[in-house]
Amino acid sequence: MAGLPRTKPLIILITGANRGIGFCIAQALTQKNAKDTVIVTARVQDSASQAIQKLKEAGAQSHLDSTALDITSDQSIQALVSMIHERYGRLDVLINNAGIAMVPNPDLSDFRQVNNSILDTNITSVGFATTLLLPLLLKSQNPKVINISSGRASITRLTSGDLPATVSVPYSVSKVALNVMTLEMAKAEPKVTFYLANPGHCKTAFNGYKGKKDPLLGAEVAANLVHGDYKSGFWHNDGGEMEMMPCWASTTSDIFLFQLLKPILRATESSDSPSRVVSVSSAGHKAAGIFFDDLDLSKQGYNPMLAYAQSKTAKIYLANPFDRRYGQSGLRAVSVHPGTIFTTQIGRPMSAEELEQLAPMAPFARSAEQGAATTIFAALSSHSVKEGGIYLADAGVSAAAAEDEPFAGPGYAPHAYDEESEEKLWKLSLAAVGLEGNRD
Image (cartoon, rainbow, N blue to C red; front, side, top):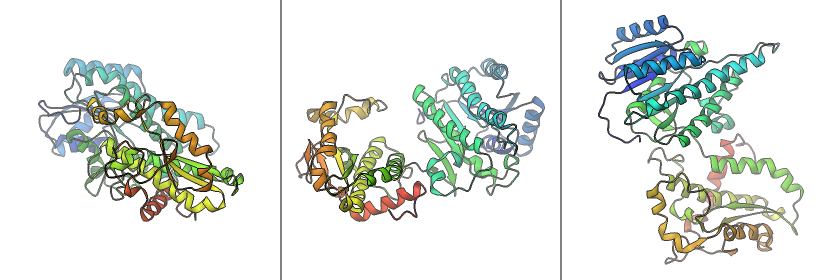
């Protein structure tokens, strides 16, 4: 949907736009296109009207409209929907910016109240407003929902040591929840393009003006998403360039889980009967290595098939260092190619065109039971006892793919064994989950 050509001026709604990031987003958008309409909301009408006056004084070119909106009031949200329906008949862009952050009292007397208020405002109300506005959004040629999130919602950054302790834990929790809600709503309504935007730590009243970034610069990420052609995702704009927030979920979650389970695995290991780590890869790894300078593919443009290929190479690159570190002491690691299996739900998010690209692999298709056989072989076979760091397929030890081997064949690509790249990914993954100082 994001790539459709634009033929009409946009109707843009920004919640909580009377100050801070919301106001700056409105300011950026009103100077982009004079024919667009920007609807400014605030809890009370006077605040919204004052914001419009300030926008005009700042040189706003777009048509401006305003209305009162208490995002926590169902009646107020319903009144907003009615107003947009009557005046415009559709909504092209919804920017969910309104939010709060509070800290419970030291005696915790208001702990529940603070947490509930933050979650109600930042999650429940956003979800309810978005749901009620969907019928108007679906009347748009290119509907977009942009939820203003935070770097605090990036699990990668939270676990990497990149961020100091937060002042408001419930606020950070609400932004993580906002990200999950956005992803789920995007799946439920594929005709709407959903985005998450991280403005950065901006100097606003929201944080007592302690931020380091000019809020006008922070607003650019949302403004760019409104007018640009970007893939659905979690975006930020640092140094003038749009980038996706770091997310190496498959790789980092594997290594984090291993670190959590390592004491148990090592407690039961022995050279005669080693513990085992089975990393499920795929023939898909043959399509790509690791793009170390573009892990989230934001520079070259996100491609789901390429992302899948990279993740499956990463599965091999993590199994091999596992085995190098622990194999001799009784903890072996192997990689597995289950085979081409069309009977699972893994292809559910794929388009018809993407599924069509898999058609040549149909002759090599396996049942789910046949695919599971190789994983069982890896877990129980004596091969995994005697030799780790190996690639298994068709319930046996595989070898390098021959030049004339079909893509779905059992062999592995030349880049599957590259110790330098394996060690680089290992260190990056440890750092991503806050374990960069771990000798393992």
